[in-house]
Length: 312
Image (cartoon, rainbow, N blue to C red; front, side):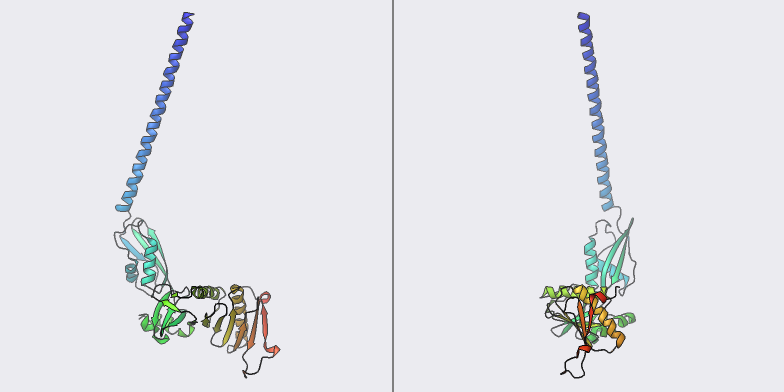
């Protein structure tokens, strides 16, 4: 009995040793994991600090696209300097700097070429519309951005400070394509920034209409009257009035308008009259009468419905 008790006691001591050894090994493994984790963390911190202070500092700035502005002007407008860090650049601010200081730049993209080069790409924008404010014409692009201001259409070239021949062709000789905006009361018009007006709904409607023009490939609009946003009127080539009415179903109305314009231009490029889009999903064209006092006959009125508009 005594020997059996001693064996049990011996076994218990062996088990205790094993448990202690296992526990010590677990603690050692835990310490190693903590040590390696701390080392990795320190390595990452050092890497980040070095990348933001020593590595990836800009030594080259390149403009990859051609525009009306010299590359040097674009780089200067960006505000980026040699020595700035590629990963610390406030990219939205850089883009804003360029588009505001150089109004005819519509959009900007920035690309890193590691380890030390910044590549700037720009896309131009152009004059599509003008609104008169206190005797001065404010010229806009399709997004409502102010590009320049002048006392008249003939002064665009001088006001926009363009000296290159291609700019003259692009913006001055195309004056007849500029849309005259009515019904916008200007509150602020700083070149390079979005036009500020007292009726924001009217301005937003202008932007929507321009998007629909682009979508439906409508060109030749010479006037947009937004005096009443529930009774919008357009003019095509100073010869066809387009009664849009409310902006309800604007996309469908512009699709119908494009079809009627195409049809009437096929009949005669000098056709005059009125397109009525105020009836839902329908468009009616009324030719101009020789005698404005006599009402049009039924055969003078042509209707187009949504169903017979050819898909793009």
